Length: 242
Ligand SMILES: Nc1ncnc2c1ncn2[C@@H]1O[C@H](COP(=O)(O)OP(=O)(O)O)[C@@H](O)[C@H]1O
Ligand SMILES: [Mg+2]
Image (cartoon, rainbow, N blue to C red; front, side, top):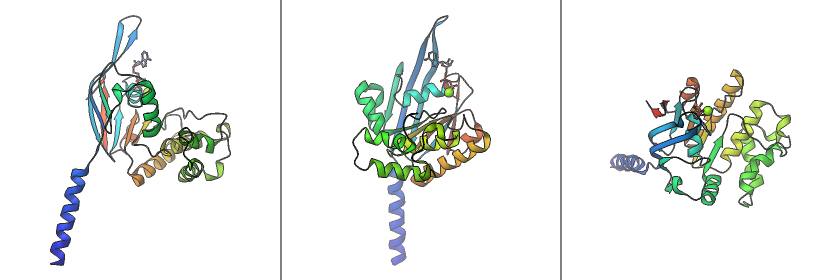
């Protein structure tokens, strides 16, 4: 009897888990064009559709110029689509006002760029605590210290970006991206500015962090080895998924 109950409990838990899968990101009919002096317009993204569930790790690969960074900047709300819809959690980010989008991004989206983009005049700790301090979180310092610990840089908190190596700078940038506990982590060629060995170390750290926290990751890269570390790979070609 005990076994039957246990079996039923496991079944219920299992089916509940299936039902509970939360759709984090939904892209539908997404287009992006840029004005172009010669031809009038260049259409970079054409009718993109994608659904990502909570906890998935998705890689978008494609050659240079295929539109990967353009896609990521639309998802991050740093640029606007020409047509189509982008939904993150229950929010239609494609239709948000600038002010709402800025706040939504700061609270929900972690972003890692190839070039790190740390604030040069702030220490490692200040760089990491900045996204929390913008919202007046009382525990910003402690959370930032924890995030730096998670990327193995607890001892470097007082150092400025120019005192850090490329790999260390990207680890600080990773800490800054995850300190807000984002709904989704977006990464654009996160190892693109690092030598191979350092790139592998940073990727190991990134995937350890993502896998232990169950964070949702969307990574764009031309590096197929890096892409293979994600649970799903998509190829962007001529502005659409192949
Ligand atoms: N702001 C812009 N204005 C005009 N063209 C752009 C702009 N941003 C990107 N593009 C063009 O869009 C295409 C895709 O660029 P990008 O998204 O950076 O590609 P990837 O990241 O895959 O290398 C390229 O042809 C690029 O020149
Ligand atoms: Mg790019």
